[in-house]
Every structure is written in structure tokens, then in C-alpha cells.
Length: 340
Image (cartoon, rainbow, N blue to C red):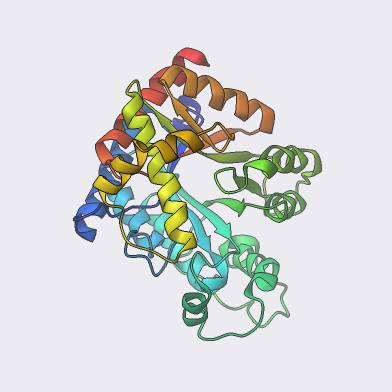
């Protein structure tokens, strides 16, 4: 039986948050500890995101974090969710992830996004000032990447003689990210696996992933069957105050992003907001977050997985307390086994 067969259909997407007052080195060490925790709990994957120009995150180089985490774990699949392809050349991405596959065969994932993962000015700098709509180049870039990863180019193509080294027989498990219908539709048409960000667009997630499964077309170089995952904001704890802190932290994070504030949250601000009348009066279940006792969280995530016809749930648990996050991941895995 393979590690995938034995693992839970659960993954973690980590933004590699820098907690208030800690160093980036400590944040990266904390990310490793989370990966080790979820590996021990039986999760299938640990992914890191790509974000830039943020004092509060240490995930600007997900390929390096993937290599680091891969070296300090042994079974769990590791990767980037994603690589924001317009920020990179397809050739370089192929080289990076072929190197990772050579280092950690059978364990590397590559999820591709067409968003910048940052603000417009930073995107402009990352792309060396290109003025065209970089997202419009996404289909062409994916085609090039697949060719460099092993599909190959036509013999008369100018890139046909190029080799993305090291040459390996395996390629990373590929996914297409989406927070709009575009991503799942692109994945379906091209025979690729899909991940939908329910944590960004909960109102679109279920329809988009069901449509992906209906419209999937197997193609050479892709998958022979549909495979999808859905990322969900989730926190599992018997401690109601911890749950309130998690919900308040996410609410403050979104408010800060909208104001252009990119600093780590202060614990005292989160605790104060979580206990304020303003927060408690506005607190409601809008379907964006799944929080509460582990059994209830696991049951709801299983229900959402079925509604979306998804193969996996990707748990997103950004917060200011890493120990609480680790406890949540472990409790959720235990509750999932009981509920499934």
C-alpha cells in the first residue's frame, strides 16, 4: 500500500506567518514543526504559498521552503501552492521542480497560479516591468512548462533542443489553483488536477469543483481522471476562547490587507478584538470558516468535501499562535478518522 493510500485526504496550506516579535528564522523553523506535526498525524500533503512584499509572511521563495521541509520530513508530500507562474519563466520552474523531484522522488507537488500573489508594484518588479496582462499568458506558460517537464516540443519548435536539467523520469504532481471558475475550467480542459480556494471565494467553490468533474477531459501529459481539492479556513479546538481568537485574527488580517498593512498581528490586539462587543455582535456563520469542536469541524469538512465532489480538503489555519495551530491539525486528524 502506498503512502497516499495510507494517508488521510487532508493537506495543509501554510502561509509561513511570522508571529509578532519573532524572527523569519523562527517562523521558518515553525513551519518545519507544523509539517512534521501533520506528517505524524497522517496528512497527505504540506504546501506553502507564494506571497511577496509582506513583513508578516516568510513565503516569498516557496521552492526553497519546499526543499527545506522535504529534508526534515520523510513521507508527506511537500510542495508549493502555488507557484505564481507569471512571476517566473516556465523553464526555470521546470528546472527547480525537477531538482526537487530528484531530491525527494515521489513527494513533490507543484500547484500553478496565474495571480501575482502580491500588489501591482511588486508584480511589476518581479516581472521586470512587463506591461502586458501576465495572466493572459498563463495558458502559454503552462504549455511550455508541461513541455519542459517531459511532454516535449514539436521538432521544429525553437525550444525543442533545450533540456530542463536534471532530466528525471518523474514529474511533480501538478495542480491548477483557482479562486474563480477560470482555474477549475482550465484544469478540466487540459486534463490537470484542480485546487479551489474556498477560503477566498466560498460562494463559488462547490459549483466550480462540480463543474470541473463534469467537464474533465483526459489528455496526453495530464491526468487520466479528475482529481480535485478544496482549501478551507478551519480551526478545531475544545477551547472556545481559542476559536474566537482564530476567527478574530483572520478578520483583522483581512482588514489589514484591505488597508495595505502588512505587519504581524499583535496578540493583544487580537485578544482584545476577539472579546469586544463589536466582534461578537458581528460574528456569524457565513460559511467561510469552519471552527469549533474537532468532531463538528471534521463532520462539516467531510460534508463540504462531498458537496464539492472533491478528493481532498486543504486546511488553511493562519493564526498568531503556532502551538494552537498544531493542536488543531492533530485534533482534526483524529476526529476525521472517527467521522469518516
